[in-house]
Length: 130
Image (tube, rainbow, N blue to C red; front, side, top):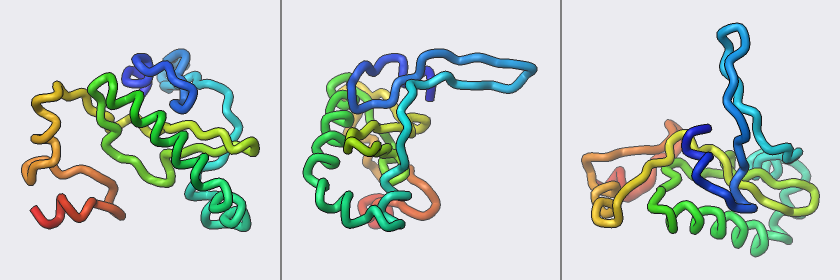
């Protein structure tokens, strides 16, 4: 995830600054962005507040994903857990561990039945149908 994130400099993508190993334990030093995941916020009492700001939240997620796509990357695992939202309704996309770089000509093959991706609790309907 750290290697992927080095290529993306966008206000809606959580930045990684440094990769370190201390006593054999790997660490990623990331941008300071105190926030909760969208999943956390939707499952607690902040759900109505998030829904009231839904257009802004989704627009920011879309802007971050567009930045990836403009660089020929696909996130590969977008979910409510991959969106961080702070108290000022600023959003950062994270979870780039499954991001993949594809030449434009190969993007269609990503969605073929030979490539299934997603978490155990969610696989897109298109992948199941194929």
